[in-house]
Image 1: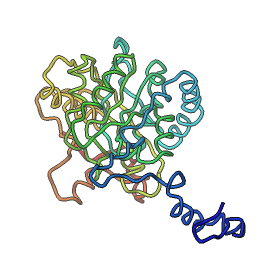
Image 2: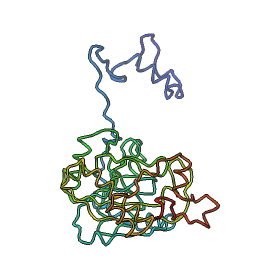
Image 3: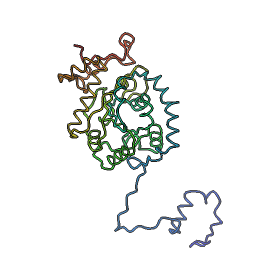
Image 4: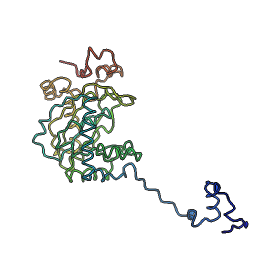
Length: 325
């Protein structure tokens, strides 16, 4: 093959033929078929369709062989690790004895430990038939993270920054297929350990599908692995399950009802069942958002951190909020 200048390609040494400069020179001299075809300047180029984020397909993670592998992973890895790190105490599971699946588990969220901890303490009939709704922009931004979370947590990407019809339709289809859902109505981890105002996704999904909402409160994970921390501490945690919330209410009312139910469970975990129910009856349940005070006072009210020297005298399970009557 000869070039325009009369040179022959076989005169080039092997290292030059394999170099990027050689390939670029070939593409310049022979645009087609070695190079990309030209694109008319008057026609806009179509946007490339990303296979990550909310577009990541997780159907493979719900196939039977993968479900078996995930069940083994949960029993061999997740449950022992959570038992050693979080040392959970579970209460309220008897409230789910007569609840028919599928349901929507809605929990407070203060740590990345919340999801594996909750999945590790659920009974078998819930544990191996549950899907975690996870933020597409955080858990599915790279291929490695998408594969890992889809496999280990059976996570499905959703849009958390705005209302997405595709995300809601996908969640409703999963409920129709018999999958239970795990969702965090706050939309993300707490920045300071206290609860945040609930978004309407969980309530709207329950009202639309007619499936009950099961409120869950997780206590202690925010001290073991808070947001922004570079290491994980060990300590005791408590997971409290509440009675299912009837989805017959309008979605706007259901948001407040769910938030109040989780706040009552938090009060129950901090005090006792009778005190929590008494406050709920009189409408004096402490809010999940904590006291309206200075940042240092809010941190103090959360109780001692695992890295505090006073932890041996004041266990991490003790909170200074709500104040005891």
